[in-house]
Image: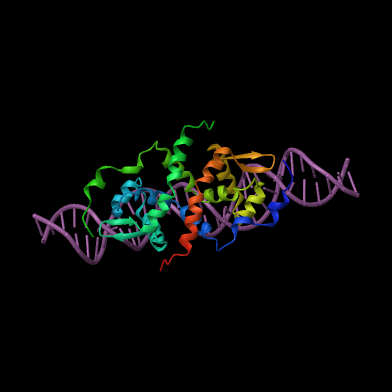
Length: 111
Length: 111
DNA sequence: TCCCGTTGCTACATTTACTGTAGCGAAACG
DNA sequence: CGTTTCGCTACAGTAAATGTAGCAACGGGA
């Protein structure tokens, strides 16, 4: 393999703190976070309905994630249970290309 | 809070196995996975350069994730180090709206 | 040839994160 | 009342990630 590419060594590139995308990637990269946003996509769910939707994930971690998502402003607890905020719905909207990609990906040969 | 909404009880909704988006959400929801794809966005990195970019994450988990990403067909080991495949670049392309969203999100008041 | 630095990658003990089960107090019904 | 469901939490057990160290292989110098 080739030697170290100098250009990549000096700049740590994307790891600078304070970059919003990093905070977002960190939040979304925790277990169940992406799934929760996904499951709330077309309407609020009670905590227990959400648990059912999330393949009976443990209430401990769901509660933790819901708290994080609430603090992030993506989820709120309403009369109908947990639901996406306007901001949360914007976040979900960014998943649309991902969904289409997933379909293409599944038809791919990945040895 | 309102009682259980019947419509949400019967259908487990999105948790059916075999749905490609679920597999993708599961893969991307593991720690460092999103970050790795992000860091490889504009060129291949050696395993150690990637580690530097990923805030000195442990080589154990990076290796695990790289293996998973290689099996998924998103990453490949080339002459210049680890790089995104054509498919991986397509995946990254779906992050574009996310990046813009992150900027808006950071300017938001989240109490 | 011998050293030296870097590559991808792994071992292993420690720490952290998550799971699974049970159950709490409150509210909405009968 | 009793029942059921709500959001939420405790806690013991297990799985995942961290941090440190180091391996064998390759590529130059000298």
